[in-house]
Amino acid sequence: MAPNIQAKLEEIIKGNIKFFSPNLALNMLISRLQRKWEADPNSMPACIREMDEFMTRYAAVLGDEFDKIASL
Image (cartoon, rainbow, N blue to C red):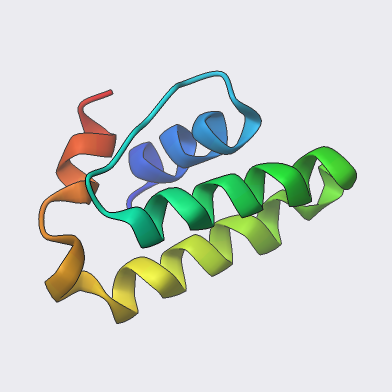
């Protein structure tokens, strides 16, 4: 994952950047990771790793979501 995308994802998980995707599964994952991070702020590396695995595994379904996140 590119460092600029990782930085944006961290901000999304922290709630500093609002991001809404037309992909329901991605929105649900973001919400779950936000709750996970709120419960344990030290879990950010695990949250980023999980997001990276999800976006790699379902790249065909997610389309250009990385580009949208990078442009935030």
